[in-house]
Image (cartoon, rainbow, N blue to C red; front, top):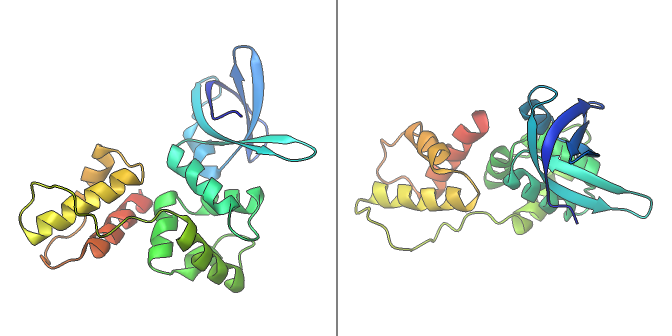
Length: 201
């Protein structure tokens, strides 16, 4: 199975399909809206994390700019009633951070904003995806140099965000924008705030 592609962004074939040339071979890859916007101009270098979807009549490559988006896509495929088209529509509407925030806050409206997702489907997805997505473990008790309650909470949030695939610069930037007036803020509250900041970027 193909897990990633690195080559040249040769052409945009449609609203959701691009052509990436690797060693003289052109691969047709279906992408999300966010991935399409990240590819840059035709002729530029491209690296996509790929999910290979095998059907009886075809093999389809789904490409993503980041590994966390691909992982969310694969989790969505495991949810009841979600096929590749709907999974891609969800990720075109919601980034991985926004999707996780919606699950943490049980925000059905965020899912209903996706074309083709009604109230019943959104409610089912909230339940199904919570059990499938590896949401952060708020009880992390690993070693930390922080000693204040606020410092410990922020250290745990840093670990949780790193586990979700965010880099040190993204984590630092998000936490800098999260208010820290309440020293009794829980890890969950801080994480929700950080994910909102990451989703709004």
